[in-house]
Image (cartoon, rainbow, N blue to C red; front, side, top):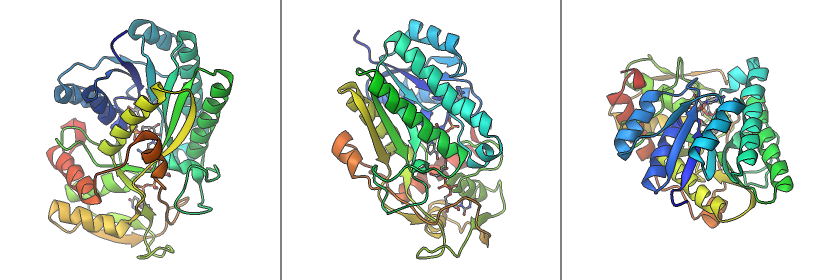
Length: 340
Ligand code: NAD
Ligand code: UFG
C-alpha cells in the first residue's frame, strides 16, 4: 500500500476539519466519518477547495458497527484519528447517558472495528479536563486524573479503555492528545468554529459580540485568585493543534504502545487579556460585563508542553494575537458561520 489512508471520525467538526486540511497538505489521504450532529458538509467542501482534493464523507454514527465495517472494508485506513464526540460540559451534566453512549460506547465500537480490520494506529481527542482541580501547575502528563463532570469522565474512561486495549493487543499504537483550549481558524478565513446556538466558549462568544450577533460578553467571575481576577487558560491555535495531530500520527505509526500528550502553549491568558487582544484584532473595544462565576469553572490552568516537543517534535508557534486575528477574519467573512 503506498497511500497513507487515515479515517477521521468527527472530521466535519471544528478541529477535525482543520486537521483534515493539514493531513492532505502533509501527504495523507483522509476520509471522514461523521453523523453531522455538530459538523457540516460545508466545512468539508471548503477543506476540499483549500486542499484541492475531494474528501470522502461517510455520514454515519461512530457507534454503528455495520457502517464502521463497511468503511474499513472500502477505504482500508492504516490509522484513525478519533474526534467524534459531544463536548458540552453543561449538556453532559444534564444528559450524562447521552454522553456515555456517544463518547464511550462510540469509542468502544470504533476500537472493535479497528481490531477486526487489523488497523493498529489511533490518535484520540482527549482534553485537559481529565486533570480536574490542579494539584500543581503547569499540568504535566503525570498529574492525577480526576475529572469533575460527566464530559471529563467520558474522556478519562476512553483513555482507560485505550490503555487496556494497548495492554491486551501489543501491536496497537495509540496517542491521547490532551487539548487545552483550542481557538482560532485557518488563516484563509474559509473554515473556523461555528457553534450551534449560544456559544459556551469564550472565543466564539467574543467573535459573535464583535460581529454584532450579541450585545456584550458576560465575564464569568472577576474575583478569581488570578492576577486580574478573571479565569486563566492556555489557548492554542487550531492550526497548531491540527499540526500536532499530523505529528502524533507520524509518531504513532513508528511505534507501539500508548502515549498521553498535552497540547497547549504552556502560557496562560486571562479573560481580560483575551478581550484586549480580540479588541485590537477587530479594531474596536468588545463590550463586556462582569457576572457571577460559572458553576464548575476553575480559576487557572495551563500546560507543561515540553512532552509534545520532546516526543513529537511539535510545539505551538502561533501567538494569541494570531489566534484573535484569524478568528476575526473567519467571523467577519462568515458572520453566520457556514450558514452564510
Ligand atoms: P465539534 O463538535 O466541532 O466536532 C465533533 C464532530 O464529531 C462533529 O462534526 C460531530 O458531528 C461529530 N460527532 C459527534 N458525535 C458523533 C457520533 N456519535 N458519530 C459520528 N460523528 C459524531 O467539536 P470539536 O471542538 O472539533 O472537538 C473535537 C473533539 O475534540 C471532541 O471529541 C471534543 O470532545 C474534543 N475536545 C474539544 C475541545 C474544544 O474545546 N473544542 C477541547 C478538548 C477536547
Ligand atoms: N468565559 C467567560 N465568558 C464566556 C465564556 C467563558 O468569562 O461567555 C470564561 C470562563 O469562565 C473561563 C474562560 O473564559 O475562565 C474560558 O472558558 P471556555 O468556556 O472558553 O473554556 P473552558 O476552559 O471552560 O472549557 C474548555 C473546553 C471544555 C473542557 C474544559 C476543561 O471548552 O470542553 O476546557 O478542560 F471541558
